[in-house]
Image 1 (tube, rainbow, N blue to C red):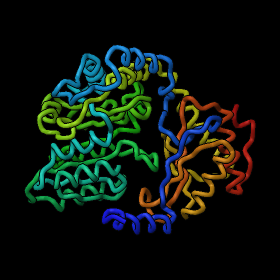
Image 2: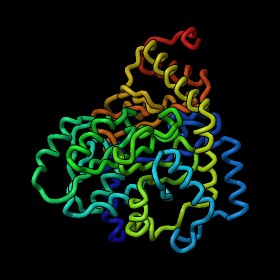
Image 3: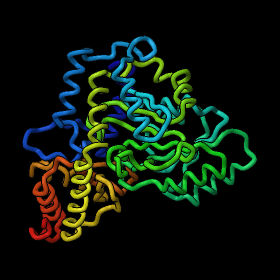
Image 4: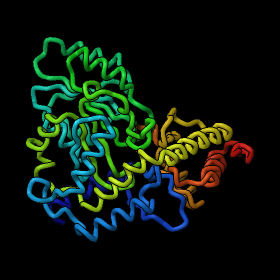
Length: 386
């Protein structure tokens, strides 16, 4: 056994003993997916796949270099301009992933003398970006603007800038950040608000621009989003002022030293953005499915976490029961996410059920029926589909 294997082996054994050993799952034909984030069903939309195929033929399979060296083309520029206009910002900048975008933003903008105040349930990439920057991390209670304000008040007189950092929609609970309150506190305490709207872009707002739709650049100075969820492609963006984007181009090491977003992914994302804006029926169908699922779940006696979004959580509690329930559903041909610590707090293991415009009402009814059966709840009624 090598020194590295000697170090890793007990860590892997400990994960197994804790029943927290993660395994990858291969998609299986015939299984209805309620675990992915393809909220609008765009990953298989003919216009999106056709755009990707055409770009593949024209530009090949890779950007082949970092954007500053040569991995930037007209497709990237067009997508950046479209995203910026959609979100009402001056400019946007593309990244190969949302995790990379979050690392880039926080590492480039924050220094060791600054303070980053995070919602306690923020995504791991936001926390990792803050740690990478060396900024002093403070975490306020989830969705609790009063607790955030107390943190800001305690920093009164301290040197260093303040950054308020929050998910737009929280990925494990499906609840929405109180952006009005956050932006008001940012203005009052001269802080910069950074919003990671990975799960809101395409889903929320009348045009699908996300939870920041309608906010001014002064209210949410940095908006981060992804193309890999509702927009059915891959990659991410940061949107904001001209100065912000130029600053990231010059200072963000994850941008400077990484191969750019593949043109075929950018072309797919560009087509998906157009669909999100011009074909709202996909978003309307998604929200109909959310309402249907909630109505059926209530009738079945299932208690869901409060959420208006495609992310619907059913807390089971302990880890073995959660994994067993997910496995029984998979045997029924229904794939849901089984989420355990450390992703969520101990004792709150859950099924993370995600809805899509591609689902059929019958799929949703079958999921609720099987959940009710396995949870020992009452059965659903066919009339609830009407």
